[in-house]
Length: 369
Length: 171
Image 1 (spheres, rainbow over the protein chains, first blue to last red):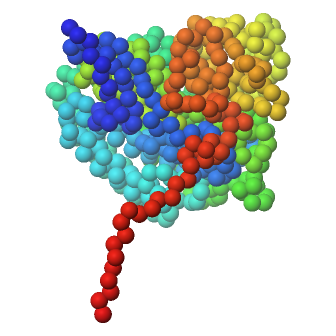
Image 2 (image 1 turned 180 degrees about the horizontal axis):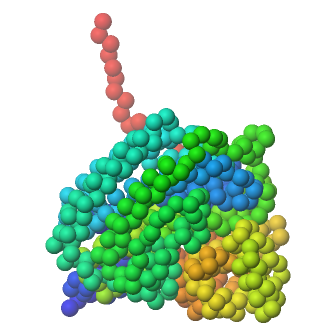
């Protein structure tokens, strides 16, 4: 049969953002493929070098659209390490609540979004509608729905509004009640099962070869490899949670793990609200003069957090000036989004390509930066 | 810091380390001569540092050097090692690490595109990745001025409306 060139994306409902895979297909089997990134390249790393340390706060959340808060967290963590700032206790717990709400929102969107490649559109609407309720909470806490700019060096921007704890707990009760319905709708659907069981395998050696992290890694290597467990930040060492892991990673397992992690996120938020000190400062004073002309002591540090897709890190270099000297971003889906597409997408069918992207957690904006 | 101290002691016995910095408890920066980087990385990989988290470069234009930073991670102990090597800024070349960490292939392409550092042995590193039809110096170098570039490349235009409706005021 004749080989045909085919572009999947950048304008395709099955692609994640403006990102394209150039494929050579024979029949409906992909023979060769490579990723074509760059359509979302906005030069963040260069822009960050030309802005003040505090001015960057408005820029960094935009690196990842679906889950912007890990960006703020790693940036704040790096600066706190360089400048040796002690974060107040209450701020640590508020940060954890924000990060877990963001993870919950990202996982809801992801579990809903898996419906699109398999042809199960109800779950898309359900996922996005429930995520919107979390965005309402974000709006009440931070004033913004998607890009919060809330976690700042030294703590968080302002204290939680009054009575928000009860609202969060009510919302968690609602989402917890919805989870079984999601399970019935998505996981037990015969369409979904046929498409994802024993399909799109991710063996352990591929995980090590590419450097895949997050759910893909945990489902393949049979270890609880999570930054929150291995290298706890904020106050993750003081809450109890267990993450799913297993030795066999197919598309179904990875979606199933996302589903289980949602329950864990809910549990972490509940524990945080319970253990959080009820009052106290939420932001340490970082500079004596104007925060805009603040100079961070020179040094180099790498800090990372666990995002919904894996290890998310910043390498921050300061030369003691008013602006960062260099910031390098490690997007968590960089390995599977570029090298994975080139080496391990071939052999699958065309209609599984978008399923491959979805369950591997490819996020175009953080690859392009 | 105990776990990293032991690690550094072990590495010091085998390799000539120029400098060691501890940015935090679970992180070590090792400055090493570029001759020994590949052996250091293979040693670290056999020692449990199985993941290459990031490979990036820093342009120290005042000292006229590029600094390559290799970040490897051990998932069992939670330790990050940042191995740094220095390259001359004019005609920067280095050998690839893809035989040790295959995942470095695209990071090297990335660094080649944004800093102009050539990686010998990585055939893919010459292909453009993010920047299509780029005709200037690599953009992450410190002497590249994005503002001047965009002013030259995209000159300011004055838009003249083709059609201006005449409005008559009826009294």
